[in-house]
Length: 180
Image 1: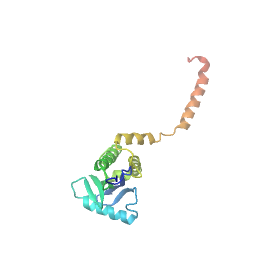
Image 2 (image 1 turned 90 degrees about the vertical axis):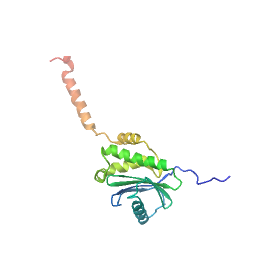
Image 3 (image 1 turned 60 degrees about the horizontal axis):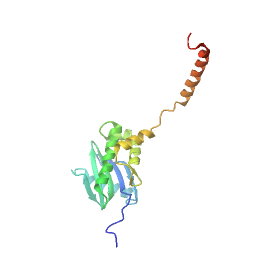
């Protein structure tokens, strides 16, 4: 018996894009060889932007791909999957991305704030999707993972200094029983 369609795959996301209000790329992660060259990627981004910049929907089909998108102030966010992909899964990825960025930036996601925090944006994207596989769709889990990664200030020298200073104070008052 032959399967009715393609085999199910964990590789759900083909691309994740963030474009500005003029359609210029701010962040783009392509996870397969659908658009192998930078020229093809730029042409796809231009095509998807021109189709969605004034559209009121959140889902479209373009070049045999499913594209879910949303705008926020002066940015457009896109999650691209194959034509057979579940739109709800792609929408969950998009919602997670926007909610996580909104929480981390503590405001509406806009171009200026995104550019100032591009390292964090890449970390968020990498926590949500890895090589096309959806890792997480819950923004609270992504935020928790990122907060665990945030390095604590390395105060080893100060801790050692405080420890040594404390032990010398204890030696000075050690035999007196704590009264002066």
